[in-house]
Image (cartoon, rainbow, N blue to C red; front, side, top):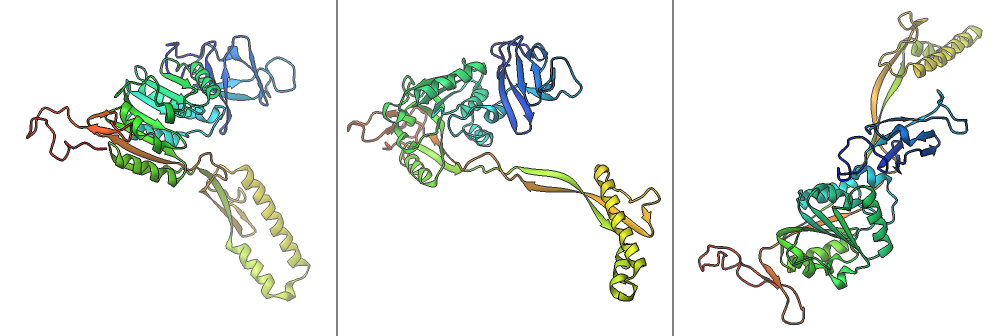
Length: 392
């Protein structure tokens, strides 16, 4: 199913649609539906025809268990057939490069102020995860124009965009070094926003100022503070304002309900008696000790089978065994996952000042911003005296 309703307006999955198959919470696979085809994995053999023509977001039952013959069986497994979203796609896609994860894409989309109908220029297509998130924000009438230095990588990304139904929103230009060649085919002041995921984004100040509309926004994605410092310096020297850097670290927690048993006071008192009276360390004392051990083992077995209950007694008879009571309470325990997908990233944002950028007369020594375009002011230009200077 297309990520955006571009190819088909049907809410049901169609032949040729790309879907996301979830085997478990951290195992997602992209699958293209074909009539008469089957998906084989460790959970069974799944017929594509069982999904085609039906809404997504449902359980997909296997026709047979792995290693058995054909025909439906009670032991066959199941998966979930899901509609692709930018968040699911970033987890299921093939990573040709390091990707921009959803928590970063969300922050970038927010601070770039992306809206439907806007034009975004992206440099560094990579695996295309960020492009998909941006496409959702500017669709259906907007456009993402992405540039990638590596031509085969750009072709692979464009193939993914076609499978997702985004070919009318995302346009990829491959084999272009934007640092040396600039944004080819992009007119002056055409872009509402620019996103740079480059090794040296601080070399793109003049070109970014050229393609951005007045008050347009730009974001650089940097893995280290050295790039952040150089990018911020470039923005402050150029025709930009409102420079700021943010980071969005993520920590995913696993929360479970655990049931903890607490022995009653009678059992503790008997144990203290045995310690305080060595003379009682005879056969009867050992017999009572064996009873306590057996009771403890049987109680653990009962708690294991009744783990969903918040209060469990040791026995039906008010939970009492020779004066001993086991009290059980359920508590929530949270801890971070041992491994989490993500990487360090710093997002530097800036906004384009008003005015027109013209080529520098001294062989491109630097961009010049000519401020104007207002209708009122002390001198008729509509700009304050401080704003009317040329910033180079």
